[in-house]
Image 1 (cartoon, rainbow, N blue to C red):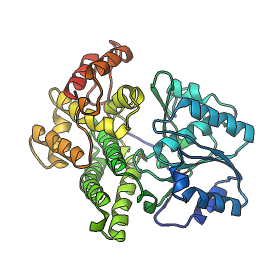
Image 2: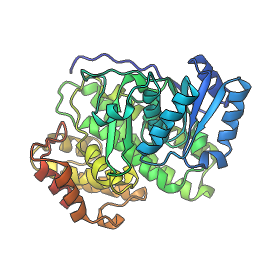
Image 3: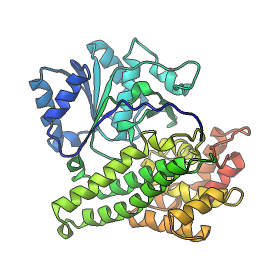
Length: 398
């Protein structure tokens, strides 16, 4: 186990709390003039937006709106948000939405703080561990409406360049939200596919951490195994009840969403990474660059296609962790059966398993990979993929 310093100043306000607590949290964390970030409008049609606006106004908090943030958030929108935040001299950024909205809000918070160049920070991949970091940011708050990315409690943010579709990321304590308001009732109206996408993303955050060469990390191994086994059970139940609401009580539905949301938050708030400096993340980086970036598909959809293929490839040369995953999480001593069971789980929550199934040409993905990844590429902390390995994973995912 490696040395670590762990800080998490995010105030997690979890459960069926009234919207008055959102305004109180903004004021508690110094917000007087707030940039309110949101997506394409569903937060307005649900009535949540008006409730929050009303509570902020009642608390005499000034509001500046910045909407139109899409899934896989675009750089152009984020830069426009930076300009708006600077012009309006806001002192707090409040995101209402899922990971994409929260990620865009984090970008804006960086760019609005002392005129920093947020795009350069993302483009260069600057983070707390870099010589050029850490950087500052306006305080950010989050009201979660889509559990998946874990951005409501994490130090990470990702944006997508409009022209190329390439995704760029940064990570710093400066952008960890000061509070996260997570009410499972806000998830009741989500479309069924979002359950599958979210579950896949959450599971991947756990699995990327688990796939580590680090030794003497038994406690976080056990926590990760427990969280993955919980998600394997919770997600299909929630997906089935969501598609036939006559089969459940409101309380049962709420409790499943509560477990789903909490798993999503814990999966990506750094706690389950303690003591393991090296994790894998190759599948995430491949998916971000080659699928959700270029093809603008849901991140969780791409992860469901790439992860089993990554396992099949890496198990040929570095089987230990994958065998351990299949045994402890999937309940089988056979790697082949374990990976097959993982694919069955993805299918049970409505996800595709191949590139062809979602209409993406594997040859195009391989061509893009050759352009993006050079001969010196070493991707991942466990599998350590070179360009030929990446092409092999794509072949297994076709």
